[in-house]
Each structure stands twice: as structure tokens, then as C-alpha cells.
Image (cartoon, rainbow, N blue to C red; front, side, top):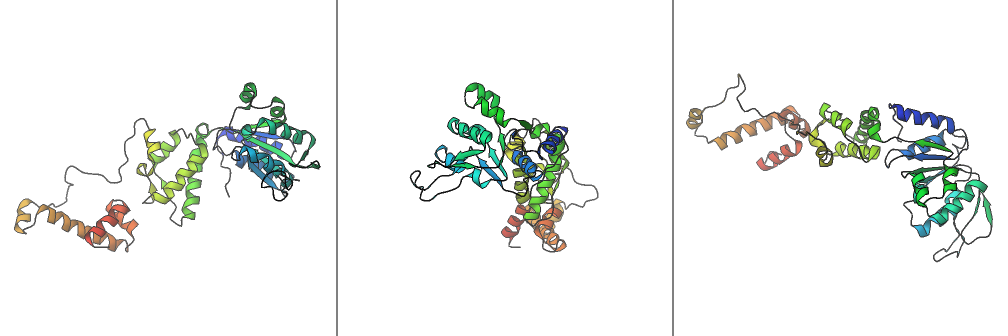
Length: 334
């Protein structure tokens, strides 16, 4: 289960509000960009409320077609419309005694906003196709990535509903404004995915840490989580380097210089004995034959020292695991 990682003062301030509002029955509006972790905050409110043992029912108002959302929220009776072959309770009934979470509330149709306003005010509604009024005891928490005040000005959101929802407003800052949380979150997600993928816990190189701290994170925490899942699968060594980052992030760097896993020396190393042309001629060897011979020797030695574990052998040789496998296959050594 995901947990809230917090080091930034802005998020700490938001969590202080959570602590104060959670024990009450007040309606809460959680605002913030997509991917900032609004649902995690909402679940924290429910967990710390007096309704914690009762249902928590989330519904994404922007993910359900407009012709189905009313039925999803309020339920319907048998025969209320085509394909309504049986009566079905809506989310408000299912959340009775607990909390209903209306995500992307800014996408809700104006017509349904009127019905929602009634539920908030009167705690009652009717199923589609029914004249019977149902009473519910629920707490409503909504979330939005839109500026609802601006939507009210445009006539896209009811002003009275906005003020009913916005009793307590908790604003979740974007990740780019929470730099203190970036690396703890990255390491947390990376550890989780490494465990899931049954591999050694990876570490982040210093260069990668610097990049993560300076990237703008348009997708916020969700983008960071997805990135850590990606590198936990594709990273071929025990350290995440710049080469493991996707092009989107690399292209965002103003002065990006590729991080090299190995160092290429243009001049011979001191105290290393290199063969000369005379020796090659005496052994009747071409340059190609010599290079293949020394490469085969080093490949075999690396495999022996690593106990046949290709990841370790590749690291000893300073090459990628895929490159090692390709060479072994080509030479018939695998």
C-alpha cells in the first residue's frame, strides 16, 4: 500500500489541515494538478475519520460516460432505461455510513450538479426510474485538477455547489514545488518495484539524483512512480545512471552530456604491456585475430569470476548485460 512521503513544508501544511478536518463530517475539496496524489490524501482523511470502518467509495466523474454517470451515482430501478434489466444501487447508497470520493468533480455535468447539491444539503436522492426518496448518511470529499472558481465564471460549474463543496479546501502542491520530497519518493518507489520484480535494490547515481531534482515533473508523483517502475525493469546494473533515463527527461536537460559507464582511454595505460607489430607478425596474427583472442579470454575469465552470473560478468567488463549476451552468442560461448 502506498504511503505519504513528506519532507516539504508545503505538503506538511496540507497534512496539518488533514489532521484537523478528518475527525469532522465537513465536506472537503482537494485541489491540485493531475498526479499529485490527491486520492492518497482523501484516503488519509477517511482513515483518520470516525467513518474509517465504514465504506470508502471512489468514483471518477471524468472517466464515466455522461449517459451512465447518473446511474453510477444514484442507481436505477429495473426497466428505468434500455438494458436496465435489474435494479442497481448507486455509489451514494454503497457509501452509506462512510465516505464517497468524487474525483474530477469539475467534469460533472451541470444537470447532475443540481442533484449532487441536493444530496449534500438534504442527504437524500431518488434512483433513476423511482419516486421513492432514499436517505443516506455520507461524507462527501471531492477532488479536482481544475480551477473551479474559473469554471464558475465560465458558467461550467454551479456557484452554489462550489461553495457547498469548498467548506475546507486542501491544496496539494505539484512535485516541482516539493523538491525535498523528490528523492525520498524516488527511492521509496524504486525499492517497492525492485522487491516486486525480485531483484537487488537499485541505487541512484549522483548524476541521476541531480536530474530528478531539477526536472519539472509535468506528470507529478505519478510520473516519478512510473519512471521508477521502468528503471527497476530495464536497468542492467545495480546503479541507475543517466543511460537508464528515458529520452523525454534527457531532452529536458539544458546541458545534457551522456554519462558513460566505461571510460575510453586514447593513450595506453602506464605499466600495461601492449604487443607490438613485430610480435603479431612473429605469431602470424592479424589485428582482428588478436582482438578476438583477447576478447574471448576476458569474456571467459569474467564469467568464471562471476560464477556464470551475466550481470556480474558485464559489470566486471564495464559493458551492458545485453552487449555481453550478444558477444557470447556470436562467439558460441553462452
